[in-house]
Each structure stands twice: as structure tokens, then as C-alpha cells.
Length: 328
Image (cartoon, rainbow, N blue to C red; front, side):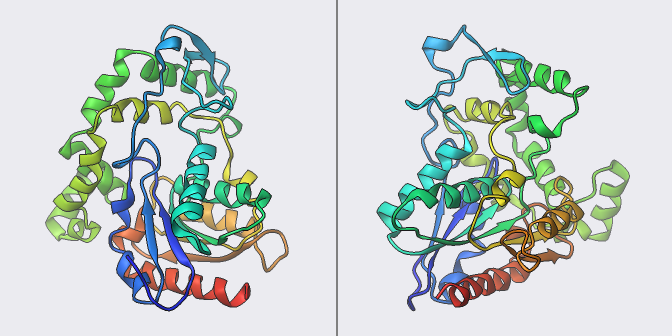
């Protein structure tokens, strides 16, 4: 969608299992303020291509994981990268910025999309012309299953699970059970901060609180439909076996453009207190990083930009305006 008054464009990067449509409730507020708005399905997700992560030439090969265990070897790009990784997704975003958007841009990211966005801003440092002016992240994935964040006791168990899912038919069965309307509805309700136990769910249903989650058939269809395209299962299993790559701490220590955070108070996976602690650790005002703001959204879950757009959209507009005013 297009704006009209010369502000930076906005590029939106989704999280794991998401796609560009997850930002449908945010487009109009930004375009009405004059921003050109783009949303990208990164490679392997949404309606983007989903190349086979396991090449025929490595079907029976074994490759070390970040945990030192072995799984079937993944296909890699010409420079040796894993096919589905943050570096490649960042390159995809930078190519879109250079070849399609062609102007300054603010990134708006959700969950692991925040890792992709920060990686893109850092990768762009080597370019003669830089376009990324700032990165706003909604409920950043803290990558708690990263090799550096799991205990020595837990690592063999995580590796065994990854190996079982990624390297056997068990993974396909797991995906088949996950990729159903009922399961996706349940996962989304949890992600959006809904009750987890059966008693809590019954109380929420009777009280009407469940309606406040805004998980409906339209949302389930937006998430599930592209997730049923050919090879989506292989991409899904490939990513949940990805315990390497950058951590948020690595990226926040290197990024040199403004970073903002919006966090749902009821995020069940990435706790709001964890996010606030991370923001304080890299606080721009304290001279320890480039984080310029942290906003907690009450009664919001992990994808609060979709669940509470009336609260999030003004914060996105303000961040764009602040970036413009501080980088003129």
C-alpha cells in the first residue's frame, strides 16, 4: 500500500509460521500517515518458494548440529550457508529494499522476524548506500533453544528431539497433526495470551474473555492456508532444528541504528520482563546500545500487532516519526 508525503517506507518481516498477512491490521494506519508499506514472505514461508532443505545428494548423509549430534545434512547455498537461516532471509530483505523499494526504510518485525531485521541492518553496514533507518520489533524471539542458552544437561535431549523430528517420518506425522484448523486455533490462542489449562479455558469461554483474543477463522486461514503448500512441512521441520545463528544479544551489541520494542504483557513464550531486561541492557539513553524505546501493551500476547492494532499502530507511527526527526 502506498502513502504520499515522503516519509520512509516500512518493510514488515513476520515471525516463525507467519506470513505477510499477519500485518494486515497495521497497513492502513501507516499509509494514512504517508508511508509506503511492504510486507515480505521470507523464503520458505507464506506464498514464497519452499525449496527442499534436504538435497538428494545428502539424503543419507550426517551433519553435526549446533549441539554436536547428527541429523540428515541440509542443503546449503553456494557460500556454504544453511538454506533457511537468518543471514539468507536478511539478504532477501536487502534485495527487496534495493531492487523494489529503492528508498530509506524502517523495518517492523515480529518474533524471529526481529532477528532477520537486525541481521539485515548489520549486513547493510558494508554497503556504500544504507537504507535501513530503524528497526521496531514486536515481541522479539529471544531464541531460548539456542546452543548458547541451553544447559549442558538439556542439550542432548534437545538434539535428540531435533534429530527425531528432522531426520525421520516422525517429523512429517508431527507436522500433519499441527497443521490443522483446530491445532492452529489452539496454538494461536496460546500465543495471543489466552488461558492454557482446561479449567481456565472453560472460565474464559463462559465469561467471554476468549473473544478478546481475536482468534477467528480469518486469522486461522491466513496462517494455515499458505502453510499447507508443497514442502511447507520440510521447511517447518528444518527451522525447528536450527539452534545456531545469531542471538538477539549478538545483534543488539552490533547494530548501529535505532531499535524499538513493543511487547505484549501476556506473551506466554517471550515474557515481557525478559524483553524489558534486554532493552535496558542495550539502552541508548544509558549509552550501552541503540534501543530507544520499550512499550508494554496490556492484555496482548506474542503477536500483539495483530491482536491489539489500536494500541500498536500509534506506536509504529511514532517510531517512524522519531527516526525521521533524529536522523535528518
